[in-house]
Image (cartoon, rainbow, N blue to C red; front, side, top):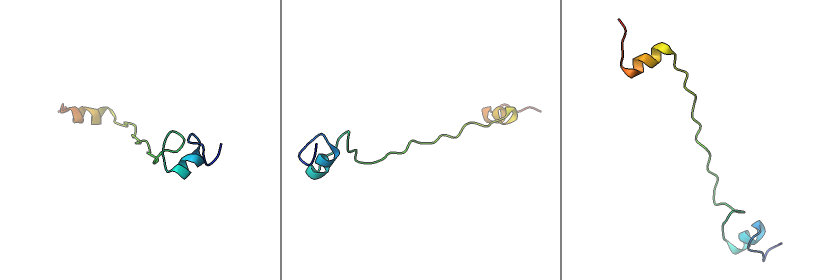
Length: 51
């Protein structure tokens, strides 16, 4: 496994190709904050108001 091997990382760098061993870029996963609504806030969002 070296410079001439198409399946190795080093071989892909030499040949200038990409694949499973050498991905093009890093994509971060989107972080979704957890819902921290209380009872009153949830009611206001739904459009139901209490007098």
